[in-house]
Image (tube, rainbow, N blue to C red):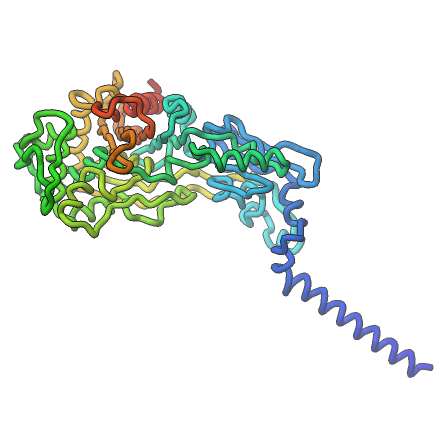
Amino acid sequence: MGKYIRHASGFCALLLVALLVNAARVQVVQAGAYDGNPANRRSTIVRYQQPRGDILVGGSPVTGSKDTREQLRYERTYLDGPLYAPVTGFASQKYGTTFLEHAEDGVLSGTDPLLAPFPLWNDVSRSVSPAGNVLTTLDRAAQQAAYRGLAGRKGAVAAIEPSTGRILALVSTPSYDPAELSGNSEAATAAWARLNNDPDKPMLNRAVRQTYPPGSTFKVVTAAAALDADVVTDLDARTDSPDPYRLPGATTRLTNEGDGCRNASLRVAFEWSCNTVFAKLGVDVGVRDMKDTAEAFGFNDTRTRVPFSAATSTFDTRVDKAQLALSSIGQYNTRATPLQMAMVAAAVADDGQLHTPYLVERTVRQGGETVAGSGPHPVLQVMRPSTAVRLKELMTGVVTEGTGTNAAIRGATVGGKTGTAQHGIGNSGVPYAWFVSWAQGDGDMEPKVAVAVVVEDASADRGEISGGGDAAPIARDVMRAVLGR
């Protein structure tokens, strides 16, 4: 009898070992596969069992969470959703996350290990820490001014603090309400289909994900290259610039919208946006120096993140002289995001230094303790300080005497550059209206804001300089909001 008991005990022990081995296989070795299995809803259910953390602007949340009492319990809500959509993105139970909701998802969902006082215990227990919050760099008044100024027209605004790189405004219109996509109902499905099929592309973040021909605003870059390369040494000296200007090696003749551009000085050419002068300047500077200057400003950089990724602004380096002439006035293959052009203006404003733009000031736990700060941000000297001083002088002249007078602000020094970018087959499209600028209050030690505005459906006639008419007033209102005027 004892023999059979021993055999039974041994067999039971063997079964126990097999059970433990299988449990270890399932819970350790194959845990990732089970977690990632679409049929396993446990992680999804856990994810929505607690309120999501908030995104804050000026210390106040612009997001929230709604208790639905359903299996996926908490659903994302938004305050002024269309205003902040290019920053927050959406957090959808059905379609995932975008923009800050995606880039900071670990903090906002409570899964970031830094939120847990004992991360190892969380790993063992598979528990989720209370969600943290994300504090942005946005200036609420500047964001509202930009949104009001665009008034639903297709376009975008980006504003940066030149001395730090803090993004003060990021607006794209037409916009949408991210709350429409938060749940997993049929209404969310219908909203997703409607937004994706809308020809105006309301979910496209035009401020960071859309590139445009920058037109004459790119002349800031060309002027910087010419001054740094000593192709121009005197702002008021006449240039050898015929009008019209025949593109090198081609029969095409480039002309200007107005008179007075033949052999105009750099100051006059900049204030009145003479295409012929800047096209020839680009050729005189040469591809290499134009490329070096453009790339110093951030063109052709595929790594730009704020913290979500931005589209790459481009300056074509494989061009002949005729193509280089067109590239130097912001046409041909030259493309830029509004964020990139705000970076150009910011570098001029900060004595030639470019601070990497960023949107998140810090992340915090529910109790307010800092989880992570914004960290160090690279600073690049993109041009000689003396070049930046002269460019500030040129940009100030545009606002006081040239095409950008609509951007003037009482009690502040404002520098700007208008632009009208042609596009479409045979340049048949309504030109994009651009304005880039910076502003410094009379009582301030340094410029406080740099802005780029693009309006796709400008209302000005094709023959007018629409950058000054359509985009400059929007930039002015944003700058006034930051300066507190």
